[in-house]
Image 1 (cartoon, one colour):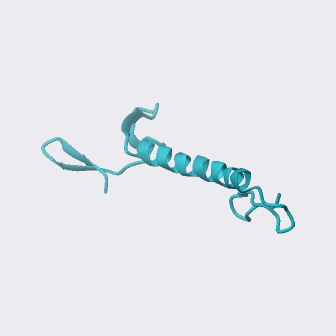
Image 2 (image 1 turned 180 degrees about the vertical axis):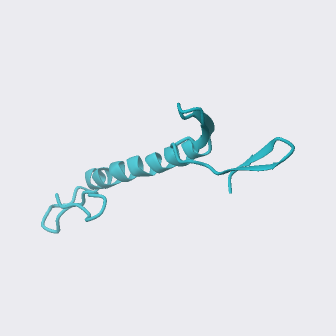
Length: 82
């Protein structure tokens, strides 16, 4: 069965006798998994953690480990984010 060039989603060859339910399932199951992975990543990115870096410093990261900027806005108050 051939696949798409970027995500390798399978699709039936033009010479294959069509089996519509099986063909749909073969194509949609990997798409569904990729979409769920994107949703999971977006959900994780909404979580914020303060992490001790081990050298006496601290950093703030989102749920997928990407660093977040921290700005002191005065009187010991900090803003996390852009």
